[in-house]
Length: 243
Image (cartoon, rainbow, N blue to C red; front, side):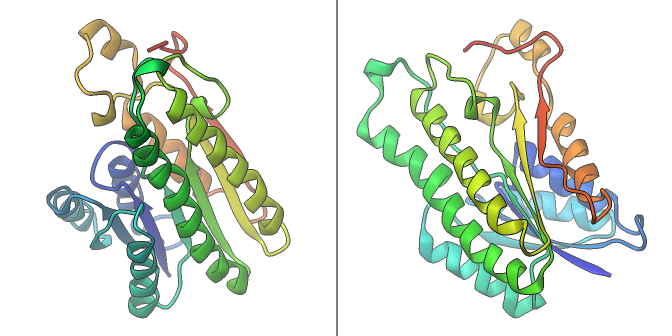
């Protein structure tokens, strides 16, 4: 049976790893047939990961979009529904951050972070949830962060956005419980992704990799429909990296 899955921020890092792990599951789990709607701002990245997903037997559609733009959010959902008729799973993975001391953060840093992490995530979730609510089925993942519960000195705005995402998770879950929609909050610690830029080898070796997050996410999706994995917390074995 075809399963329509939207993954934002799918071109790199955790989003890319989740897309590939869903693709690798093609043909398993009672004939799972994923149709992956891969969304991000960079077309070249999307085309690369889509080709890899197709090699595993998955259908992969590429959708260049910046979720900070509500018009593009509407277009993403409308296009998916026009092509495939429904949405079974949403992975809210797209996220950005600016990491500086409190006194150096600017209004532009604030707007840049909040427009994606809060505004974009909210309005995409709102539109997709209405589809799932009508269907009385579906699964929404939020890739938040341990920064949704713990602040770091260089991450003032980022932590604000992630605390806000966690509030959205809890609010949406109240609605989801009445219509058989599953909500999973995924809170990773330090994962080596392009958001970190260049890091010393010693720090990098202590970090998790995107596939350390994607495996548990896909496994949570395949959990029995009667069961909701409400929260996944994943940290490096050595603990948090206080950057």
